[in-house]
Amino acid sequence: MRLKTGLVATAAALSTLLVPLIASPAAAGNLVSDESISTNAYYGRMAWQWRINPYRLDPIAIIAEDRATDGYVIGIRLVTSGESGNRTWAMRTVPTGQTHYEWRTYLEAGWIDHAYFQVCKIKATTGAIASCHDSKVMQNPFDDSNMS
Image (cartoon, rainbow, N blue to C red; front, side, top):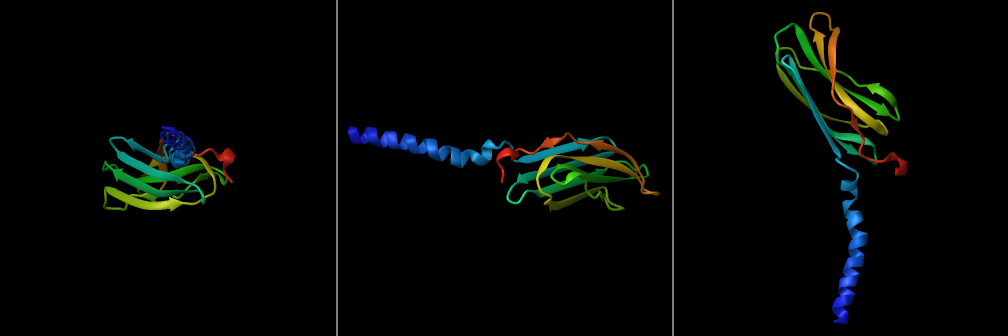
C-alpha cells in the first residue's frame, strides 16, 4: 500500500512539473491569426502563424479576389507595428486577367506587437489607390516581457 501511495504522489508531483512545460505554447494563446474582408467588389484574407526565435510571421497565406468588373485592380498588403516601427509592406495585386490569386510567404522583421492587413481598390489606369478596407488588428499572442 505504501508503494502505491508513493507512486501516486510521485506521479502527481511530476505532472505538476511536466504539464506546464508541455502546455506552454498553447498557454501563449492562439498562435495563428486568420481574418478576412468581403464585399461585393472584392475579397481578401490573410492567415499567419506567430513565431519566436527568430521573431517572424511564418507561414503567411494571402488570398485576394476581384469580384467586380469596375476598372479597379484589387490589392492586399500587411501593416505591422513593433520593433521596426510602423510598417506598411508591399502591395500584392491580383494579376491582370485573373479574378483570384494566392500567395505564400513569411516575414522576419523583429518583434511585432500587432498586425493587420488592408484590401485596396486601385485604379487600373493610374495605379492610384482609391480606397482601402482594414482588417481587425491582431495582437501578438506572445508576452514580450519575458522574451530574450
